[in-house]
Image (cartoon, rainbow, N blue to C red):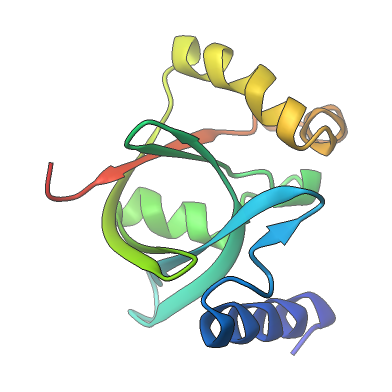
Amino acid sequence: MNGQRLLSRIHVSLYRLSRGRIGGRLWNAPVLLLTTVGRKTGKKRTTPVLYLRDGERIIIVASNGGRDNEPSWWTNLRHDPHADVQIRSEKGKMIARKAAEEEKGDYWPLLTKMYPAYNDYQRRTRREIPVVILTDESR
């Protein structure tokens, strides 16, 4: 297991045990737990992800730290858009979709204000980093 994956597992465990009191913020930005189903394995995978709220919507960024390959969670969501989300002790079932260009244009300044490194990540990679919108599955 690589170091990043180990740190992610520890983060997820501490977040769940403390209901987000530990690991609920990183770099002064809020963190949620995103659980997707692996497109190859069918196994559930949970990843801590920074997020922004817009009313009932939850906005996340598929940055993968500016790497040229997209994060596995986004590849999984493109295959099956259903996800489980935990914010602190609140849990919900969500549907994911890629933000349209206009929506991304609206959200990107808010996201980079929350976490300025997203601009660096976009400069570092050849791919267009997607903004992902999560909405409540029951709505």
